[in-house]
Image (cartoon, rainbow, N blue to C red; front, side, top):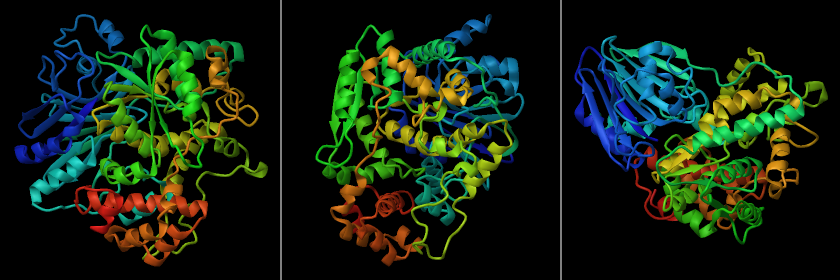
Length: 591
């Protein structure tokens, strides 16, 4: 995993070296092991390397005999099998990404159909006069672009594009879309192609863009992420298949030439990954768990520690306190340039900092809930309306508060568009609910947070339950093998009950939470006053309503207080350009 960026100029103009260098500096945290540039006429790439596979010969850009150049952020997990299938190819490296050039040579724009991996890439084909930008089907790796007056800029993070604009203009030339800020406060993330930054867009999951002369000339989708079928299978056969598929997915996700570990909670998904890793490995798994001592929230440390002991893992527990939260939150908000106001960013960031002392890769259980239907809300969404079924996110924590100036509406438009798209597919009700999460929640919230929090520390995150083989199998399961009684993920639980009884997969789970509301309430009045006067919040929100939200004990208001606090710190860093120096109060007081 690395960082990529580039400029694709119009009218044959040369690539501005200073802007390309500025983009590289903005992504330096993603590539602690080196960087390189490629320039060919009106095309320029930059690559910041985090070396995971092929440490000796895997530097990028990669080139083939036809003069094509490739930069990739990600990992191609089935590279061993791809190399074997591409008989007769003259290889220049032993790495995982070089097969992509050979696949492009054979299949053109269909070159990603057999790839298992997480990736965002740029491939320059000088003979055809085009550059191809592409992203993996689940959106595990992000890629952003901006159509500028003199060409197209792209990067792994929006802040690199902002840095190039600043280099060109000499000022902090960035603005937010107010409707996206509204969406962020209601949803904790922003939906669809457009980011919160005016003029900066996302390459969508599974999308391929073809750029010629600095202009997008074609958009197409790569391999579909979700099958439009329901497999007719009985439980014994399904159990045997899930065992094979999960073990295989973990096996290919463990391919690395550096040490790796696991983010472990007490949940089903990370327990499943731990079980597969322990069964496969000759060395003990390194596991990492966050704990929240002296708070009222459910703490996962005892269950996670018991799971680690049963698996023979080398376990590390990281306590996170209110003092830690307030001291580190400005830094956390700063790393999330594509903002995600999910309180899980706090343990993700701090666990990544700790794990990076020992390993360069961590596996995690992300994706299991979406693929195997783990969220309780899926039971409601799967019902017809006359039985109590209802769409997700009908209301947000800002509703009824008269918070915004001027009043804003349409925060649910992005979700409605995803609902309409899902309705055109051959999905049943449960699959439509799952597909909505694959459209936005997963790629634009969960996976963005994972990427930014880990890459800040030069740590690669891998998601074996988001492997294509797991998704093809799990998403197509009959509803009865996903939902059973009041629990989801039935088949995965049933497999885990046999494979690792210590996980107690059918025991009632209390869910994962971070006590941000409890911590904020300790000094709510003071925080409310400071957040209300932060310029980004003051431009959008009524200060009296903001103060009232921070003073409230209502659960929804505490959630909104957290999002407002995050947004204030995010705006301070990414719009106003102020460094996140000092703790939360110090930053807000200096606003």
